[in-house]
Length: 282
Length: 263
Ligand SMILES: Nc1ncnc2c1ncn2[C@@H]1O[C@H](COP(=O)(O)OP(=O)(O)O)[C@@H](O)[C@H]1O
Ligand SMILES: [Mg+2]
Image (cartoon, rainbow over all chains, first blue to last red; front, side, top):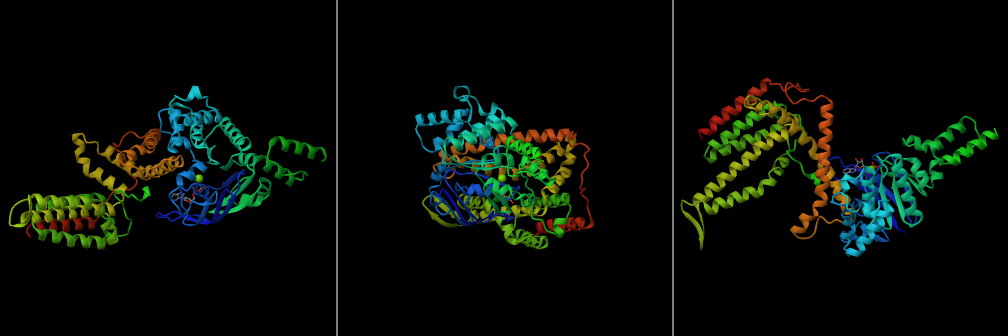
């Protein structure tokens, strides 16, 4: 088991004392693509920060590769190399004068040598679609928003983590930027066998990419299963103020109107086939 | 962890001290501070201490909170004490060793200065503890407004203070976020010698400044698109208003300031 979360409760110690996570139990296997959805404030960001020890839970344990990271504070650097975390609006953490230096920040902190750092920077820049020779000396602050975000993601990928966690990475991107990001995640998952944990508000994105969907509500996991299983709970999701993917929503409505068709479909092309089939036999 | 820092912290309570007019509280504090610097006996300090105790009781602010506010200046107080005790000469020699000596005059001035600083800090922290930042800046604007004639931009100054106070928590939150993001990339803010630690702040400070400037830009645009044209002639939502007890407080403080002078 890659990540094991046992009976974790987390309370933020400030004047409000919010209980952000309530008795969470969760196992994540190598090679899963997990989509986490939930209303704002449901505890998604808090949950993923447990995975690399940025947050030590108030009670319960978190294990990464069978090592308990909620007790020992010493080897957090090692954990952070295994679990790469891309925060929301990651472009806000860029600080170096050149793209190269910013991406090299992580590997440098790991104490790698110059040659290895250069290799990694080259590799991850190509991965995120930023030409090495074209972009390496440019200032990250003169890039477009989408390019900045790719630099920031590259900065985490350069740590070569086993697990890549992304907190709402598509927020504020244009459709092309979102498509690019989805392609990147697909590539990392399918071709490089990375384990990926993706927080997103866009159900289409989750339905398209994830192999397992986790729904959070008020600090608890309320649904956990394959996209098919989770999106079958239409009523429950609506009650939690969450949507189905739009295309699935349309299929549900058509079925309500008396059309006999399958509703657990998340891609537009499959859905249109299904609708045509249903109309033919109508 | 960064959020624990509270600057000029205000504690909301329903008390007579809280409901005094902000302008009046600023004026009263000023009178008290002037009085504090004109007296030169310990008796006067004693009277001030009793006065402070009564004000704390009236304000319903927990005693511990007031004391906690003194913590940051403890070092300053200790330093003042030591400097006076060792360097001010005069009176009888109480203790000496090689070139070091403690003389009675030094001990006396040391404790005198320390008492004065203590009371000074208590006066000002009682002001900030019982006056909300917004009222405080409004009050400061009023108190400074006679200086407008000499070109002091009182309204702009108070707007600046209001904005600064508004954004302190936002910036602290931002700093915490950036710190976490850099830690996720293996940054280490805690260990190493002073030079390394100062260096390790660069990945925190650069993004923080950039975001502060961006926020400032956005805010300026937003204010301008809502037709903000400087403070001149702006009216406010909550008008400050003197009431009878403001003048009672003024009388009490004036009597106190004069009495203390004769002790
Ligand atoms: N650093 C923090 N300090 C105090 N409270 C926090 C902090 N971060 C999040 N919270 C609170 O914890 C709860 C869960 O927040 P979060 O994990 O950010 O949810 P999500 O990512 O699903 O929007 C919210 O009520 C939020 O206000
Ligand atoms: Mg979040």
